Image (cartoon, rainbow, N blue to C red; front, side):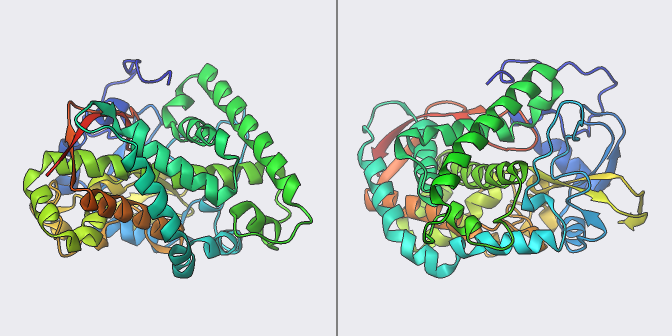
Length: 413
């Protein structure tokens, strides 16, 4: 994507604690400034950044406090990313994660049935079969890109099933997701316009799928669920696109980047990998630990609806707060001094905030956990070990915390 090669050009004095800088994530150098923030200023104001002034909320406790007070800290007023909406070059595409109650409640309730335990049970054999097919198609002891061949392939297949999306076009979902989730694109007018074009293309494609299902009996896919619900049946086109983009980015990025983290992280911590290889009963816990360690969405944004105080800091109405899940998941006071490591039997791995907290906790969390867990189980069945051949190419952005590509070889253990 166009932003990958760009070196940042900051037109203001750089604050070393401005953790929105894309290069920190591109170069995997974000850990140190966040450790400093957690230790010295867990609620910290950055005056000048590419995204304007904002508060960084970087430790576990205040993030849970903000997430527990959705009336005081709105998702709707300023949206859910640190990038501001620009009326002159953006089109507002509302999505339920960026709505406050009561709209949020009704729309979330519509899609929630797709992710119940019984649905997970129903889908699990299909997920297992597709995972097995992808793993069996890989060549042993031969370099390949894990992101492309495994992570993207498995997640786009899952999305295609969730949306009843034409199978042969499923890679379009990855393409649209990458453009929708790349927060860096807002920095140039040209890329903003380009993104808008792709979002319209996505919307037009899905509008055809919607039209084909109107008046038909309900089927278990998300589009049909929307058509047959009071809360979402009458969305205008922009809200429809907004909610689709939310579900695509949510379903794509969380799972895809955690699947890559499973390969990369276990390679980085061979003691944990050996423990997991010796005891597959740890897979469920290891899944939570990998999601915690990766944190595929680095932040969510909230906007204060009135003057308030957070950990001794005076927050003013309209102030922007970035909730850095990526930092809270490394909070030593919760996860211990080894929070930067993958520990597959970590007793409280499930306490991570990678899916958020409170009313906006990720609606598809169970599905992401299921997909990652099955991948680890199927790898264990084949005694498959992933050996990473070099540092991955990472997403250069402070929203999606992910990987563009990663060369690996697979061998037996």
